[in-house]
Image 1: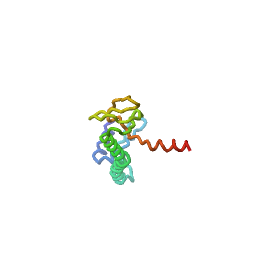
Image 2: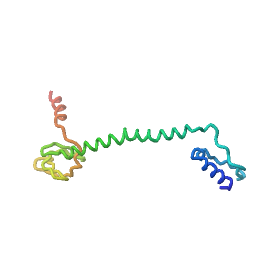
Image 3: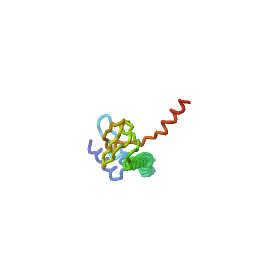
Image 4: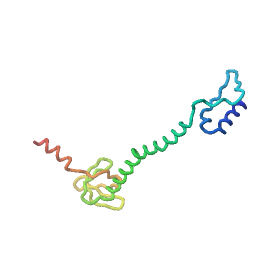
Length: 144
C-alpha cells in the first residue's frame, strides 16, 4: 500500500466501522494513489448499523427456538425414558433390536432378544419403548 492509501485507511478507521466498510481505495492503472482521502459513499445512513444490530439477536432467537430448544426437549425425554426402564419393558435399541428388559443396572441393562438369549447393552443405547399394539393392528387387518 502506498502512504496515501494507508492515510485513507487510518482516516476511515478514525471515523468508525461504518466508514471503514465503505472504504474502497481507488488506484489508477499507473499505480498512483489519489491525492487525498476519498470521500465517503453518499446515502449510507445509520440504518445499516441498526439493521445489523437487530438481525443478530433475531437470528439467534430463530436458531434457539427452532433448533436448540427442540433438541433439548428431545434429549430430556430420552433421559427420562432411559432412567425409567423397568424389568419387562419392551424396548428398541439404537441398533434396531427389539427385546424385553430382563435386568436393570446403573449404567447397563440386559435385554432378552429371544428365548434364553440375553444381551447386555448400555442404557444410552435404548431409543424408545416398543409398542406392540401398533404392530397388532395391521396383522389383524390382513387376517380379515
